[in-house]
Picture 1 (cartoon, rainbow, N blue to C red):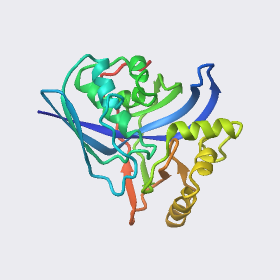
Picture 2 (cartoon, rainbow, N blue to C red; picture 1 turned 135 degrees about the vertical axis):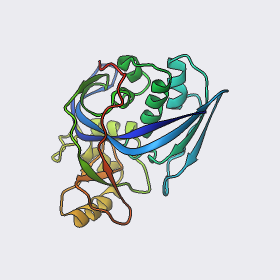
Picture 3 (cartoon, helix red, strand yellow; picture 1 turned 135 degrees about the horizontal axis):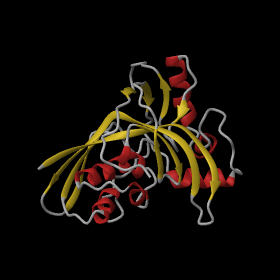
Picture 4 (tube, helix red, strand yellow; picture 1 turned 60 degrees about the vertical axis):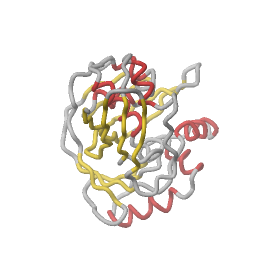
Length: 244
């Protein structure tokens, strides 16, 4: 049995700079790796199971063939029985599924970032980790100098569907997010309950929160511990992956 950790990613800023003919959105983002992690227990055999250690996760954890862990195993042509202890809530915009997939690729010694992005846009960054500028549809990962930062996360007990948020962004005419994330207006339009959590974190921190990726997590820089809030710190790259 091998134990592998899968750190969450935080999208610090996100701009959508174009849409390809196939409908994929082109981004220009800054992402960092956090010390909030899933833990994967990898053994012989073939199978996938989850142990949900999150609080109030409203999005189901699918163990079917489209799960990113299974996709990662197919990509690196390996077999394993994997038990995932989830602390990164599904649908929170923290790249939990992508982090799990990247952890499996690291376990297999697989370091092709461009191919990693073919199974999930955030898998490429999660494979590289640390701090990076991410462009294209996620396959261009340019490492940036690492710095220790502290963030406070407020993760609502519900998730946001990334495809639905991007589709709403298109339907709204491609709005510019005034607070560093172009997807924020679309996420708020789809899930109005997000406003309550944004305002709660603002009141606790005295700062204007930013949405993480397509949501549902809000974050501010700095440590503001309290009920329902997670204080997380950045961690450096794990190494071995080649940035594309």
